[in-house]
Length: 257
Ligand code: ADP
Ligand code: MG
Image 1 (tube, helix red, strand yellow):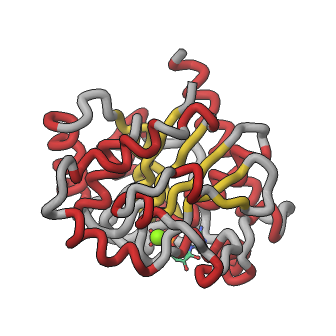
Image 2 (spheres, rainbow, N blue to C red):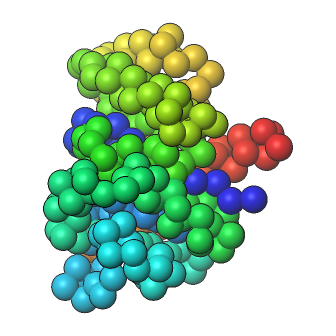
């Protein structure tokens, strides 16, 4: 059984891409077959995993708009068990190009249905908006991971995301669930981080992952080397915590079965 997880929060800079790349790499390290789908026109996941966008033949845009078979868009990452469907800046046009098309909200779902049997986990790295690309992701997904940055106003704007999730549940994907809430960029030196954790736990309760991702310089350096933390610095704190998160994700899934 494969599981499709959207990593979503319309706020930028909360750790969506960092989580997609490193959770993906850690799940793959633990022997799971993983596909990361980059559906953010910025394509940070694509470059962060070491793919040169100029060399991309087919990207997620071609899958969504030009009806290219998703198999043709799947690329290797250099990590065993980890594949990616890349995004290039072409995707920026998709928000507009999808508007007048038939079944525009279910295009990703239909495409991923053709390849999901090849993977244990498909992680979708969403753009920082609640537009049609995010709606496609929530419609295609079995569940959502919501990364929340440990900072002031951490919960601000979340009601819009939860509202979009409810709308998708009502009209497009009745079985969509919240997989988990992930606290990111925690700074142990401040009281603020601890307050934010308490606040988020009060709101989301047992949905909050026990693993909290701290600020870690190695995590922020890895993408500029086109590497996940597992290959860039496997002994770092960043690698340790994302591996912990991957184990938590697997444990929850086994418990749910
Ligand atoms: P998003 O995809 O939500 O916009 P990113 O994952 O790109 O967020 O993270 C935003 C920035 O913060 C990036 O420069 C990234 O390298 C950095 N970053 C993310 N998580 C951490 C972390 N735990 N420690 C340090 N830097 C981080
Ligand atoms: Mg991103």
